[in-house]
Image (cartoon, rainbow, N blue to C red; front, side, top):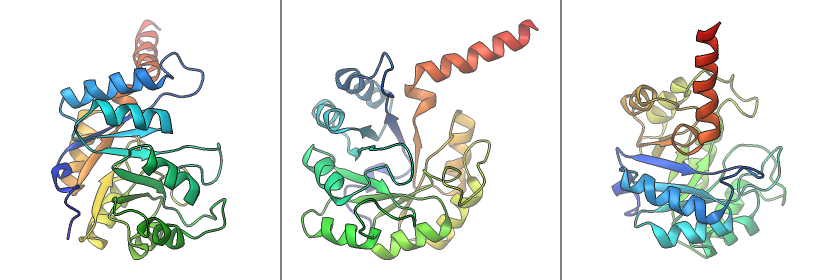
Length: 229
């Protein structure tokens, strides 16, 4: 049975609102404003990174906030430990997202052990950011409600596709009909978002193409410069 909080997300667009350290938009207040703007545009949930962002975003939007805490630059760094998970929920996240790969976690706990510890404290839905069918199956066995294709192409488990990994998405939809399978990663156009939805995604996450103007500007700048030559 789908967690009651997830049903409003079915068939909808989730928007990831993140800016990277050192960028002009890297401020929790800015991200909260961006979050409010994407909800006004139809976003059914917002994915926020960092404790301050999560707290501010949760106070500005009336849709579920999927919280993550990126700590580190290599290996498992998306909400990497139980301590990070607890802090994300305490900051106000409605849904906890964490690395759902089979890689070793910094605190030595397995994903299943982490999920069990969270379950002892909270009934919030958990989203596993996966990189392969094997990791998604393991996450499902651990008891998460959501699996995403978030890390496909970034860990070495699968080749990095140009655009979303629709092949993996289709495999997950078929293998895990009882879970909310979410498409995330390299969805840069409305056409790609539609393709993910048509592949059977429970919901589609778009981040960079909506909320990262530096990258979007780069895309247009490259196109204009190519035309000039």
